[in-house]
Figure 1 (spheres, rainbow, N blue to C red):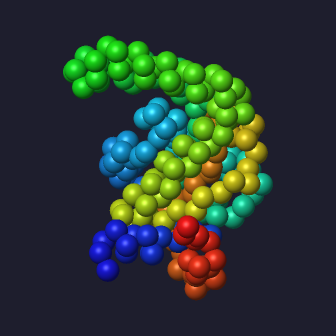
Figure 2 (cartoon, rainbow, N blue to C red):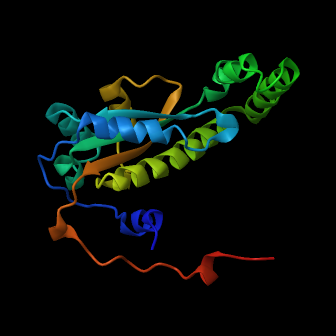
Length: 206
C-alpha cells in the first residue's frame, strides 16, 4: 500500500482526544502551505480557517458545540468558512497571471466576465452553495494533511453558527461550514470502522 492510501485508510473521525497534546505552530504552517493546492471553482479559494487553540477559546467552542465531549478534549478546534464574496476577488487572484503573461489581457477580461456572470446570475443561493462546496473540498484535504503529520481529526456540523462567528469575529460574507476537532486520538475510544457500502451500491457506469 502506498503512503497516500495509508493516510486515506488510517484517517478516522476521532470521538475522544488525549487532552493536553500541543500542536506545534510549524505543523499548522506546513498544513496550510500545502492546503493552498486544494481545488476550488475558478481558483477562487473560498475557504478560510479559524484556529482555536487556547483553553479559553476551546471552552467557548465547546459551549457553542452544545458541549460535545470531543471538543473539550481536542488540542485545537478549527472553524472552516466559505466566502460568499469569493468571486469579487477574482481580479486580484488573476492579476499575477496577467502580469506574468500566463494569460493575456483578453483572456483576463474574459475570465473575469465569466466568473461575475456565473456568480451574480446564480444569486445568493448559488453563492452559498459554492461557499459550502469549495470549503468542504478544502476541509477534506486539511484532514488528510493533518493525518499525514499524525494528527487525528473529526469534522462536525452540529454547532451554533452565530456563537462561532462571534467568538472569531467572522465577517458577514463568510459562513461557517464545518467545525474540525484536532488532536491525538485517545485509543480507548477506538472502534472498528463501521459498515461501508460496496462500490456497486453507489457507483453507476453508463
